[in-house]
Length: 357
Ligand SMILES: *Cc1c(COP(=O)(O)O)cnc(C)c1O
Image (tube, rainbow, N blue to C red; front, side, top):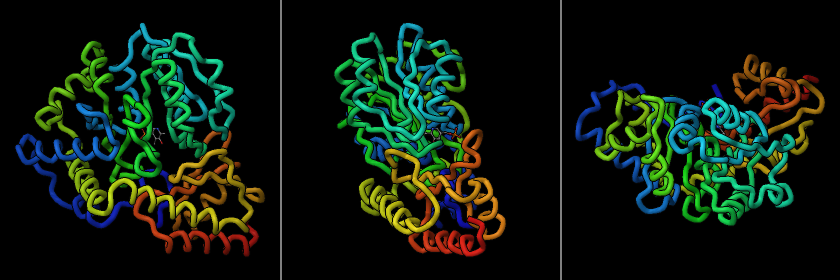
């Protein structure tokens, strides 16, 4: 299998080997040490401000999105959400469900945020800003500097869902004054799904401490308290946490976050160069290194997905709903190489020869 989806993605050999081992008991000093080390490495990778904390949630990315909404906000807030696709819409639904006052900026699909759009929301009594910095459903990477400056001017708490952008695009909590970053195990961290990670600035931690969370499992106060000694309140996905630790250490050993971003960026650039004479259009106004969203001009996107999977053993990422036939995505995260890009291009050129695209 050759996997170009956006998650779960392919894991490297060391991570896969850990997956084949017995899962250890976890209420031990050794496991606590591993968690504390992972927290430290996460804070470093994100350049988190001093005294930031990191919570490892057993649950996919959406569990952490929900935990943030439930623990960081109250009915007294008024949050501004960028809603430009499936994941932006998820934040909208979470605010509705948990009765957090909000307004959404409903962006045209495939489009980036602009100063002109943001201008309308200046000085309107908002308390926080929620953005999926890479709207993975359409492959739009929003302008973080612009958003960050808007938040600074308006004194807003900034929450960034970077689930598919972490390790693929630059993301610096200190530089951009970000209060909460959410990420997950199955995107560029390239581990199996099951763990999501929330990094909180001291300002965000203060909010968590002051709030009462109406959930036992997603109570971040409890998670942070246990985290002080490198533990979690309940049995976590122990094996995946061990894989994440190995992967974080690898990233540091291989040149840190810059080297990782460069690797993914090089793969993306190589792929985008190689598709120039294929009948595809890149739809996004502003690309992340993680994904290339493509509109096929001569065939159905869903057909292309099925043919590549069934006849070539190559997985790309289909879209659902209204975009099913018009858009597919090629991921550049996970254990991929230029040679893998060449195999995908070869398959696509073969499909072209067969008049399938
Ligand atoms: C993958 C992803 C999520 C989380 O989805 P889960 O299926 O819950 O892991 C959330 N936001 C973005 C931007 C994503 O790419």
